[in-house]
Length: 359
Image (cartoon, rainbow, N blue to C red; front, top):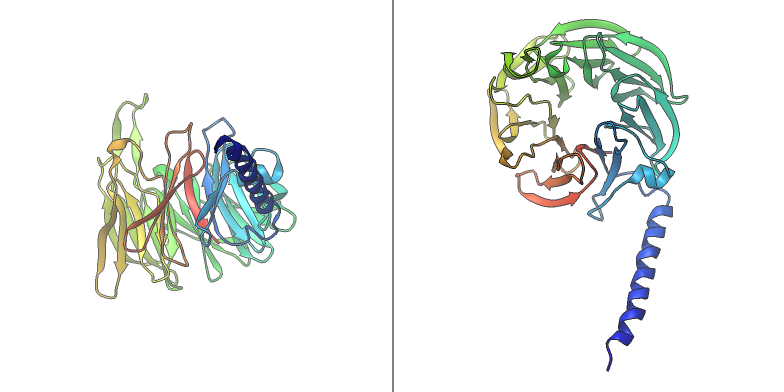
C-alpha cells in the first residue's frame, strides 16, 4: 500500500480543520470579555507594539490580537492596559494615543490623543484618569464615553501608576528618580488634595485593604554628562502608608545602590501579600500585625542577559505572571508560576512584553 495516497488527503483535511478553527476563533463574539491581556511594547520607533491574549480556561495564547481585529498595527511602545465597563484602554505612549476597544471583539472604538500617556484607571462609570509622564507631570481627566480630555490636574514629575482607594486617587510621581512624592486627588472633584514626600523614584503602588497602600520607590541614579559614570545613587524602598492620615506604617530597603537594579514592578494577591521584582528574582512580602516577612519566591538568574521586565499576580488564582523580552527583534516570553513559585507554563508572545492584566 502506498502511504503517499493517504498523505495528501489527510494534509488537506488537516488544513481545512485548522482554518475552520481559526475562523471560529476570529468570529466568535464575546471571546475576549474575560482573560489575561499581555502588553508587548515592540521595538522603540518601529511600530511593532502588540497585544497578546491568554485564555486561562483553554490555557492558550493568541498573539497580534489588535491587529487581527482591526487590520492595522497598534503602534509604537504599548505601555499599559486597563478595563472600564465593557471597554479596554490600550496606552501606546510613543504613538501618543490611547486606543479604546470593545472587549468582546477588540475592535477599535476610538482614540484618545495625549502627548506622553503612561497609565489609565477608571474612577467612575464615565470618567477615568490618565498619567502624562511629563515635567511637571499631569493627570488627564478622561470622558470614557466620548474619549476626550475634560480637564488636567498637575502633579509631580513623571507620574506613573495610579490607585483608586475609596474616593481618592493616589499617583506615584518620580519614574527613574525624577521625583519623590505621591499626589492625592479627590476623584469626585478632580482636585489635588495633597502632595506627600515618600522617597526617591516613587513609581508603583498597590493596596490590599481600604486602610493602607504599599508604595515602591525605585531609588535614584544620576549619571555624568556622557552617561559613562554614576555620580549619585540611592537605595530602593518599599513602604506602607495609612490612607487616612498619610503616615508611614512600615519602610524597608529592598535594593541597595550598586546592585544594578532600580525595581519598579509591584503587585499583590487576593490574600493581601505583596510581590516585587529585584535583581535576584521575585520577592514575596507577607505583612502581619507584628512583623513583615520578605523572602525570595522565584529566584532569577540574570546571567543570560534577560531580566524580569514585567510581573503581575492574578487576582483570581494568585498565579504569578513574568514577562521576559528576548531582545527587541523577536518574540518575548510569558511565564506562569503557581502561588508557591513552581513554574506551570511558558508561551511565546510579542516583542518586549511588559505586563499581563487579568480582567
